[in-house]
Length: 224
DNA sequence: GCTTGATCATAG
DNA sequence: CTATGATCAAGC
Image (cartoon, rainbow, N blue to C red):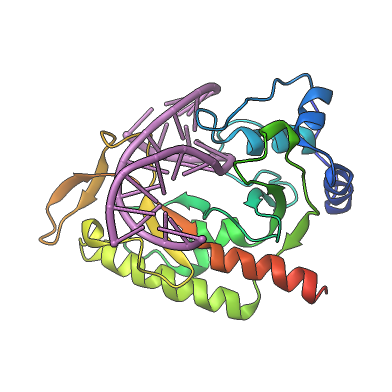
């Protein structure tokens, strides 16, 4: 077990050391077997990187590096550095949301500071041969924060009005709401349009690829 | 080709 | 079931 990094700089140094390595090389050094495909282990890359960077493994509802206030996100990209998938942020609260505000929302807290680690994600590259890219530490700009807030407020308004089942992934410029469950039979509590209790699929907030692409692009074109 | 809706593994 | 980690794959 690798111990948690004592500082942001140490975390970045560790992440930088991984840049250029393949997932096969990294997993082998940790004696972890690398799957042929991610179809049955969709979170494998994220777990692998958590292990090498010393994140507190497990399913605790807090940031990966809570003592540093940093969340780790691996992101699959193509050869041009363009994200291939949306990025899951957190589960959306469907009950007990009276009084929830953007400022104290889980979305904003999770995204307050993120260590993005791009990883080659094209499916024609064997998992073991996919290379890890240059990491980048990001916090939302005031513009990005405002955009996310607008999307979040619209989506949460619909939830508050009992319209969660009407929400589509087409809503939200950068932040969308989609199912987040093991399968279609998983149900959670929510409220319908007349305030009546209903059972519906759990939903999660996801960042569109356009948004994460901007983050990666901004960093490489306009480093701080 | 890209997005939306559906789904997979694991821990507690 | 809910939390963590996400990608799959049908359909537009």
